[in-house]
Amino acid sequence: VLVTNCGTNTTVFVNAKTGAGVAPVDAGKGPDAADFDPKTGLALVMDHAGGQITLIDPKTHKVAGTIDVGGTLEAAASDGTGKAFVNVENKNEIVAVDIVGRKVLAHYPLTGCDGPTGLAYDAADKLLIAACDGSSVVLDAKTGAVVQTLATGKGAEAIAFDQKRKLAFVPSGREGTLAVVAFVKGKGTIVDTVPTQVSART
Image 1 (spheres, rainbow, N blue to C red):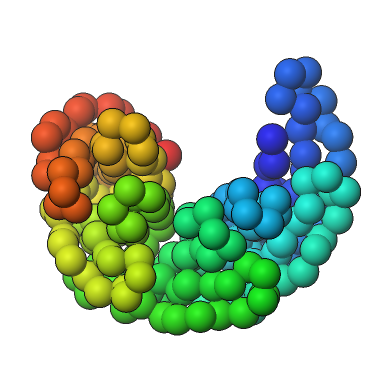
Image 2 (cartoon, rainbow, N blue to C red; image 1 turned 60 degrees about the vertical axis):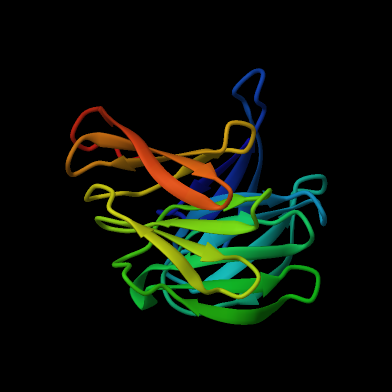
């Protein structure tokens, strides 16, 4: 397990069985969300204040490189081919990056989105789902085109996607609700809104 520590600009690997810390690793400024890329075997740490992605090798517990993106970075999602996508909160966009080449590939404007935080990748339909403040925006992962906007709650911070059941879960901390979005043939429909608790946003 990899834990990010925003206050100390570090990450730490933790033994999932015992809970013991294994190895601390320096990151960039304000490390926030993290993701894992199965193609390269690297962990991606989004440096919220530094505008870069720090790449960490889980085997050696060392920094393997960085990708300069710019802006305040939030969540990321890998497509499993060595390409990843990251939400840039202050620019209302998603940036596509080449992990192997350590470079930015494209900028996808998030029309209809305010402050994107959570991000998920639908592998079957090749879609990106970004959780914004009051809405969730669905994009074509290949082109970056917005294909759908769904009205979800205020105060989202994360999103979870069940690849098997084709369900996205979008929590809204300000309203205390969890939107359940079902995807059929590339189209999302809100099938339930579950009451949670105010501030339950991840």
